[in-house]
Amino acid sequence: MQRQDGFALIVVLWVAVFVTVIAFEFAANMKLEARIVRNFVDERRSYYLARSGYELAKVEIQRRLDYVRRNRGKSLSELQQETRDLWFFDGTGNTVSVGSDRIQVWIVPETGKIDLNKSDAKILRGFLETLDLEPQERSIIADSLEDWKDGDEFHRLHGAESDYYEKLDPPYKSRNAPLESVEEWLMVRGMSQELLYRTVSDVRQAEGSPAEEGNRQSETRPLRVVDCFTVNNTGGRINLNFAPETVLRAIPFLGPGLVRRIMDLRTSRGSEFVTADEFRIVLGDDIYNAIQPYVTIDQNLSTFTLRSRGETEGGVSQEIQVLVQVGGRRQQDPFHIIRWLDATY
Image 1 (spheres, rainbow, N blue to C red):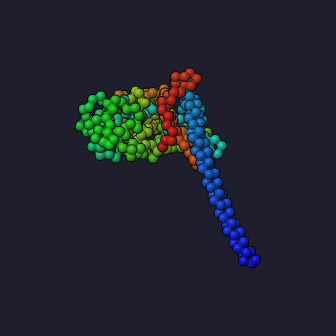
Image 2: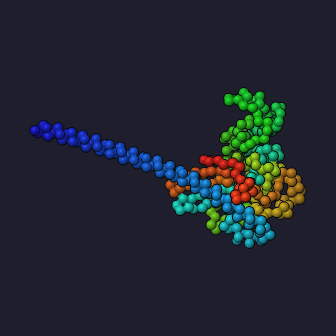
Image 3: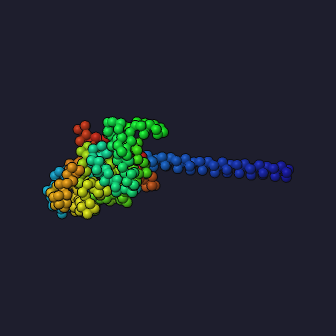
């Protein structure tokens, strides 16, 4: 009987151990599944927060455009007071809290960027000179880009046409037509992901915001090479009112001192409110006349890049990038989406 009791006790202990192991395994699996579900919910939540940021940005863009149209003649002190609660078109972040979550939106006009198809080739070469590249590297990038866009198969001195690209793996032909996106530049000889996404300044410059207070919280992000280029600046000329300092330095005849004067003028006055006469006074007649083929002073903006990031309380974030044109095809929604990218970086 004692032996039987001892055997039964051992069996009971083993069953207890077995049940305990199963319980722990079940609890661990449930905890893992709960974490997976929570992460999925946070990812979805952050994504739709980012989409909400885009919808909010449309309202804020229209508010600022309407304000600028109505108030160009006001004094600087009036502008500083009245624009405190408006979002700015300078690439500085606008932050909105949604409970314990938050939304960040950056708005940049396309006219302040170098157009790969329409801008003068001298501006591209001037920009490449600001990067840490060898002279031959710069020549290869510039000549190859021109060869990629032109309609023939005759390459420039340092350029490339289909005979070069057909030897790559995988092979492809030169487009021989304008680029359809900035990212297409990666297919052109000399350009690489490392170069296109290289940071050219520690923070994006706040170009001409007369007020940084009120409900708007300013946040900055690194300015990269890709952020300085577009294929949607249809005029091709660089907008002096909104171009980043890095782009201004690429314009012929504008040295560092003159670029600094432009930045100071925009900061003190507000980018949308700086007039041609004010630029002429700051730059001088000779320089102002010399840069006319390369620049514009256009305060009527229509095309913007919006980057919207949604971030949950737990730190999960998603970001979208939207290229949008004001004055859409539908009367009830004046914003026409040209391109939409999810999960940008």
